[in-house]
Image 1 (cartoon, rainbow, N blue to C red):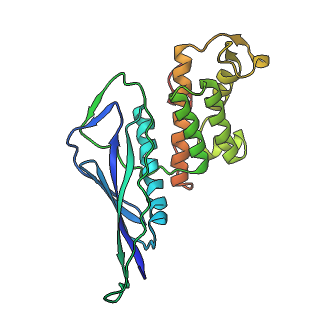
Image 2: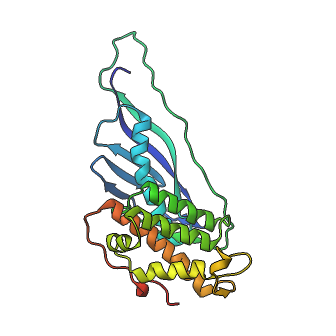
Image 3: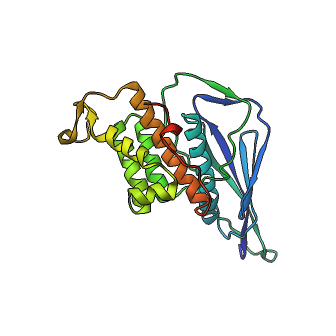
Length: 258
């Protein structure tokens, strides 16, 4: 092609193992770069800006789609959906003369699915809302990978929760600055630190030298840490999308009672 232009990208929605979407109405969204339509478990990303090649167009679209996947799982508490790349639509804005060769390079479809044990099943008649105020960043990716590893059973709760907290605090330059930037009470950070470093047993303790209670976390403490991590990831996504926006304060009352 002399002047290739990516018109659109097409993806298939892969339902989570615990989810079935039952005839949900189409859902649409738009950014400055593209329009998105999800209908019949297929996503069309129609570009408003010029992209001369499929890889650059995919990087833009898939940042948005990844944010959609993460936000949906954080809100549901279990995997909801993933998007599989199907095909592009590419045109030549300066087509060749008759008889001249024409080629298009298209990368392979890519999808990574994680198998999970299925303990329940949900039928939904609505798709998750698009991520209108949620954006992915390298720090959010790190926190998400650690949280997902915990959900898959390959990382301990205290290690994961403490790592996510330190990533968030490091992104702002320390606990005090993180509390201000992300509107998260210092008491929330303090409680995460206490539960992760001062409580634990032979299998779960992070540092035995700092233990004050040598025991496993209670079910209430486990649920509180899980919710606190999800709140931190979601809050970073909200801040990424609009750093100048006003964020409601997250306090201890925003989380389950301990």
